[in-house]
Image 1 (tube, one colour):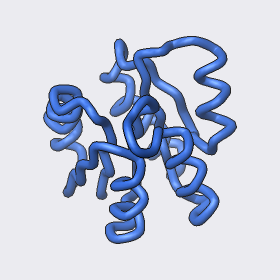
Image 2: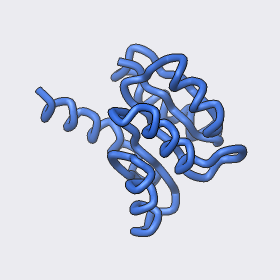
Image 3: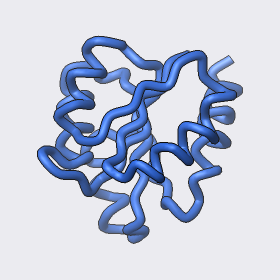
Image 4: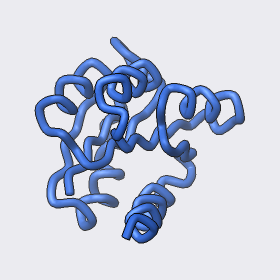
Length: 119
């Protein structure tokens, strides 16, 4: 499986890559939504973990554009802004899940649960 990891914070990307690399064959990294669109089209990842607040193009816009091109895209939006409004905006953009950056370990748990239920 391939994971596209999108976050403008190098330390967060590194932490998430370290956490996710044992569960994915390939982890592709981007630092903004514009790069994410190109990487998604080039690599066709199985999962995307997308930050919201980024320069050039934010994660909500990138999520919406990816989902409009590929409605089956599995995107988990992560953010330090853990409130109902942000979660609703992420789901409206097409994310299948919203997870607070305070609970990043829940990303792997969500993916594993999703894969188990799909069997």
